[in-house]
Image (cartoon, rainbow, N blue to C red; front, side, top):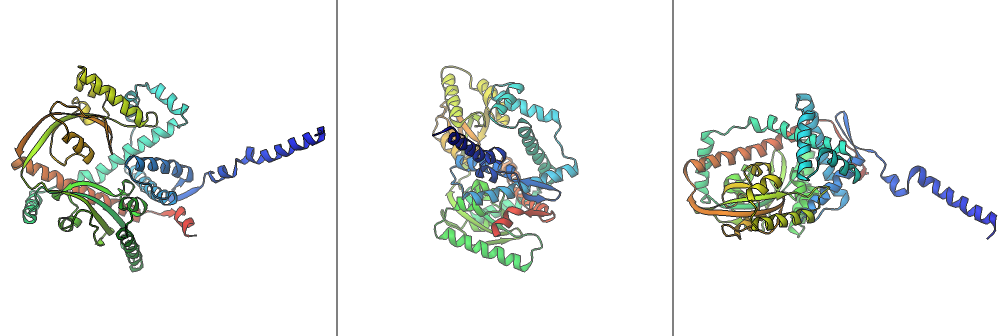
Length: 438
């Protein structure tokens, strides 16, 4: 090949490279920022949506729920982001803020759990490609939303003595005082003051979903794909609920269902609901066995993998068995703030109070034994049973628990109504949905 041929080939290669240098590859062009939603006077970008979709994909896998197809998950995550943005806008209007001092304290706590100073924590984040300032703002937003919900919903909830008496009367009439139910839920939402055609469209969609479920579709995956409930991206899992903890809308129906059964459509002001009874536990006796236990909780992060967390817990267990004090290790290592201050002590635990994975592992242990590391939706744990006792769950203790059950049920219902109203009163343009239709 002569010199001219070499030069021509080199020039051709350079010309082919220039578009990539200026604009990136064709795959990268797709990744350019665009607006995927307008929320009042704010926007959500495609880059923000990509990051959040990846986060939720990983969360679903950790919960052993198969992620839905990417495009469907992306739409669900966008709806989640829209709801978050509406709450942040309201928080700004009503003056709910988190100052830098409070935020810095929270960030320092996270850094300390990873055995890093604040400066080291920032360096590690940036070295691994994470934007430290964005991390701070995401954390600030989470704290703001929690404070806003407490102010707008939680602090306004009251429970009267009459409600407690009615609750007890209903339990007695149902004859299932201590039964517990593991439920999943799908909501096809209807806006407030919906037009007849909107209601018909929602009902048609709900009927189609119900038909697919009864044909064998996976309920958790369908919930993650389609449900418009706050727990959609957790597979619609409502967890274990005692009779008194069941949403009022479902309570009469659930007690008559069999494990594995899927309900007909249930209509409410929020829209059309479908529930599935996964499991049912018979706990009719008022004599219950309580367990006093303590635990250490650790969570995977961008910096620490679940394998590393598991290994750390194995090492802590070995240290405890070699004579180190469980309480001291819990205070210095556990990421459950409520129990860590008490040396990991969870107090006396009623059956069904904890998540199923925790209940199951705790139930295998004899007093004094420590579990192997295990995973729940909250992270990775080791738990030690201290002692057990049998007691009569009656009187003031029962009334106190019932008051809290009613309160939590009302908070759930009011939060859903509040979020629906917030969405209905806002200007929201979902451009991703529009593109899908086109």
